[in-house]
Image (cartoon, rainbow, N blue to C red; front, side):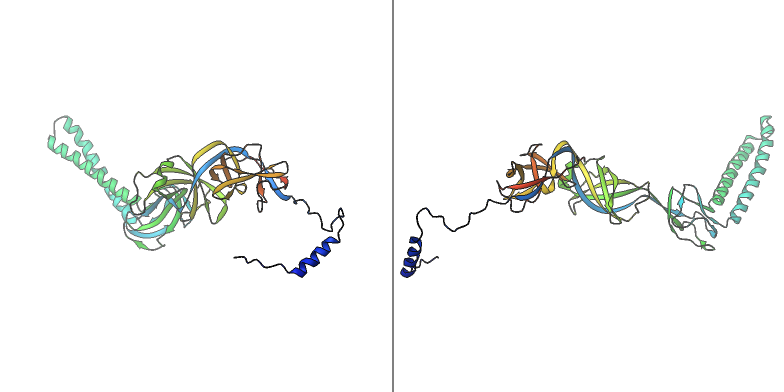
Length: 356
């Protein structure tokens, strides 16, 4: 609480005497208060263009197609034709096993088959003339069929001594060595197709209505932070994970240039809604004051505070739904200390048209 103090009488008398020495109409010795100095600011004009409502998510990208290459038959590795990192085509021979025993078994089956075929051809003529029994002739025919199957199986096993790639891709792992004896069904190689990668995005269920297959997306990885890669939302899970209340969106990533690698951690930006011809301003122009979004508009060397309604925010741009016209000059640099009616010295900054 402020306490009033009595005025000292002597001081008051001296002060009155000093004042009485000044004649009426004489100028006082006080300086004139200067006018308010204009505040330097940068301004720009709003622009119209397309802007997208976006959602951000992070996840690891993986291969959409990956296949282990199995040895179908046992044997010793006698040739290795590819190494890790090699690009291979479906059906290409990756390694060769010692298949001499299998080759001999195939030749033996083929010889026996040819023998029975010739015998069957000779009995066919006799059967037409009724010189052999029907049961004997049919039994011979069954023998031909059985030996044909035996030969086909022997030929297939011999072909399996060459280990082939089941898909197009890159050799991501070699698990066998030259001279090694491997068992049937051993994993000899791992083939990974890196031309198209896949990502599983876990999105809160409250956002479910915003997403649908076909939405465009982009992603960035730490190794190339200034590069955007294209992706597309391919599938939306119709169920919610009860453990965390999210649904799964599957994104396909085009990696035909080979710049991305499975296992990379990526930041996704999904564009789920397009606003065409939106009125936009730089994000730096919008200031939150007293729980209201405002911009400062320059008119005749002074600023006017405008309350605006904002929409989508993306890539440093803010959509203005109301409160601003296209020809309004708005402050983007120099807000500090501005008030409604503040005098300013404005320099305009050109702004290229923005497209989403």
